[in-house]
Image (cartoon, rainbow, N blue to C red; front, side, top):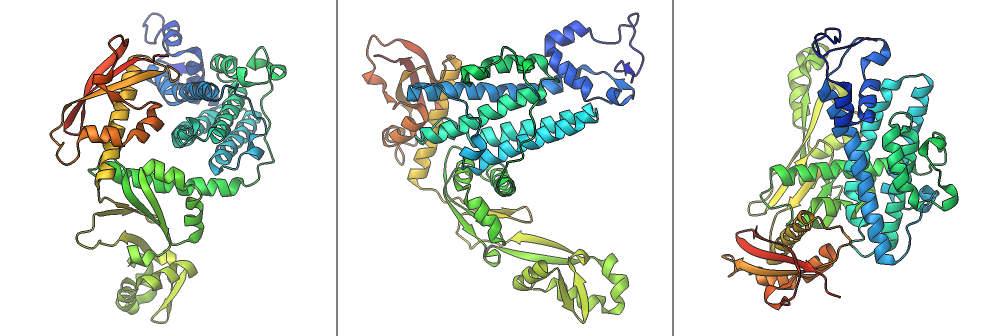
Length: 486
């Protein structure tokens, strides 16, 4: 195919209607340019208008998320090594070793990508590789890494589980580098040189390009169950998070008392129940309850499709219409299960109607919020108490400390002491911020690895790193980071 300028004209040195290739490579990298061209119509012998923003989009959508996933791994592998005084080790048999559905799911997604890339490369369909890669990178960063952040950091103290998750991510990143070596040779070389430190010495190669493209792994038992479970998890989390973002005035850092997950099929709730820790973490809810009692929380609405049924039923249409719209929840559930129902001597099938589910109105006085995507229902309990509000304030302080660490360019391994002073506390009568700082020490210990101390106790010779005064609700607190004293 012919590569044209952005205006559709032929590229011309005289007209200078195209960006300087050297500037493109210096700005975005040769690999981003390569991916952009591979994913264009030009490899299908079609004309293609070259646009610089397209190269930038490749960096934003593929290169950066992929690179950040590797950085996150390195950061937490070092954290693991420091906490356990041992070297991180590669696990080539991670699929058989791990019992976590989330681990099995991302490994199976990687296997699917390997299968797709090898099949398409045999046909020389280069342009189908990038869309598949973008989808995988999204699953890796926005699902696997996001859902397992605290797990890899061993926030709950389980170092063995942290290692299993880190080994899974390490395995995925290494195999992805081998798979994408023909497409992004420079990026994967840099990544491989960084990641190979976790490999046994005898398995380390001088270059990623000395390794073969990985083969499809056929021994992925339990993959279907893992895929279904993750689909359930994502549907619940997406629905719950959209409610917390769009319809809830309680801050994300403040935990909710409870969330209820409702689905008519036990298979769904059982699958979701196996990932309950992820649901609780992503929705920030103390308790997760599951139910298959759809009648308790929702009602179905049956709307007959007049164009379909009108011609077939003729004069019977009004009676059938009224009967269908009057079906109770139990009858509708049976209709959905069997796929048919008899009304006025006529067989009505599911495709003859539009079926919707709506969350019932809650009893007056109950602080509940519910939403459905037509399949699963998520209900959030918005009733607050002092303990929930206190944890929310504590996590706001945690966020401020983490932001201060970032500004100071500290690594996760840099140990500091944290001091604080409540500057202004108009809410102090009902929930004093000083009391929150004292009673929520466990939150700070888990999230920060240190318990903030009163600023009045800071030694005179303490070496300050950074300090800031931030808002926590309507209160203000001064936070000071100092070098850890031995």
